[in-house]
Image (cartoon, rainbow, N blue to C red; front, side, top):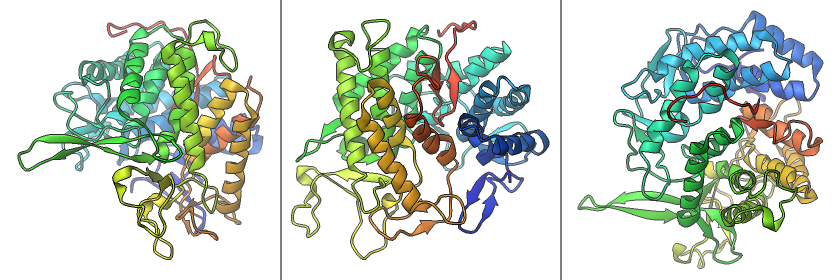
Length: 478
């Protein structure tokens, strides 16, 4: 017990560095264990944190992943355990070991951090770049820690990142997936709501929610970004008119001129966005203090109605991608466009397809299901905001598919390598977000709505619930 990752077929654990692990799986799971009332499992997890957890690891850990999974997990465990000081003590220690990652020219955090040496580490593959989503998805955790400790050092570090991002605004309000570590400007790179873009948009809304709607800078940034997404990325399928989000991909010609190609590709990661849009519509797009469930027509602004409609339609599309042999959604889908040349194909898809997938051939990476939570996250939010049984029905079908196709008889769940193949083949890996996100959101979808109500809690991007609070810390950016 205690390794970072679990491999359910070989019944082995592994760690993210040769220096040892920091309990990714255990800590990512504690708040789910508490919510489900699993007292025996909780006692084991707490004992492990007490006796065996060590952050003195001379190894390089991802700054973003460690923050959302481990720091977020400790902070949520602290709150849900009636403020057991063990978790806050370990959270402070971890945050203090992460802070050196922010010691750069502008204060944009380095992608990696050596926790044992307390040193930020460059990612050799990024060459002076940082991922926009990664640097902009540390804020809920560090701000809440400042609130708990009355030490504004954590708040100031992550708020400075948001100041840099705001100052780098592009004319359309969207964010490229990479920024320069040295000048704080966006570099020419893809614009998308999938990997390296997704949680930037998510945390704009959630920072506004976290401090009870008191920081209007985040409302303004969120509204600006949502208008950019509506104008440039939201598209309609050619036949059934499915709503999806495309990607803008930069291309350079022989004269080094840059043009942008709209690509009809959507990651499973994007499926968080439907529920997020619906939540945002009731927060930044509300004309009344308390929006009805579901919202009445006169309670939302025109922009709120726009985002609500887009959110509902995006969830429909994400559910449609579960129409596979297993009932599981693939990692990446593409949508039909008139110029795709697929009509002459023997297996021409009607609306969406898994690129490179052909009967009898090895499945592409896009075809896998990695136990991801994004669709059920949106179903949870949509049910809480509407009370519509439809969303529970969808969630139950997904849960049944996970149980049937991902569950390993000897314990645990594993990645399915091809959602359109039955019986399935597995990859020997169980992602920690299965426990922290997928199973938690499914559980909450069927629990009473007064468990972690949306007007009292905000979920970090790893589904760790943190309480909404009135801030006492103020800096110039706010």
